[in-house]
Length: 243
Length: 111
Image (cartoon, rainbow over all chains, first blue to last red):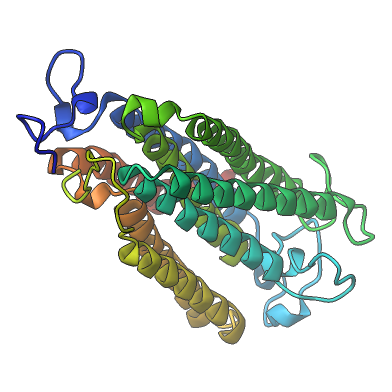
């Protein structure tokens, strides 16, 4: 800990009133509050998805005694996600259920760990390490966005049954595609904002802004946001693709 | 903040990343387990269906504890901050349970 300071609290973490509520800097606390409000938004989206989904019959409700392996698409029942999302780039016509979403999940988990490594490097005030890990994080973010663009494109164009838009889709009731566009789109917008913020703090790091400031707390704050985006994906992955 | 070591000397310090990589591997393995369950257990029976849904939800919360606790460092913060975040989330879960248990049937009948 700092031996040059009389108290153990670094100066930049003291609020303007001279105290430090909850022992964090102002910006970091506000980031937590913002993320909490974002949690409510995403919860609302996923809860509505669940309620609407279970207000439609499943394939087996509509066809008693049938196996999930006989599943076919119909506007009457809610689709089984693993039968909708089974395409992988460069493997045209091959049925690989959930493999591509699995890859996307891995990309996001990986970019999450590189982000936390950048935060850790920031604590050590190791500029080179922060730059290195931020670059990996940005790369992960772009890769995820590209994967999502591919998935959307494939979902919209479909596999010969008319594809998907907001009023009709070949996979199931109209609400299915609406929720797909809204939930993954809202999450994708968050990833996009996150990548912009990551580029911004990478630029500042390279220019020595945080070195001059004496601390890398900004990396920590943007890191919180980035991990939250990863966290949301963990829930979207479960409730949209797995269940 | 307690677990963080702020570098005030300006010297290059050794990275302390063991715990972070450990969480990365845990997240990866849990996700892999979810895949195995998704493809090996049939959802044809009622038991299989609810076993899968239940396991996926539990594993999702396991993953979120690691992400929020270690990656977002929430477990290193003071108690009052931890509860400021966790308590509202518990209310959201309460809200969800109330909807499913008391309103869900009604929504099903009006649609």
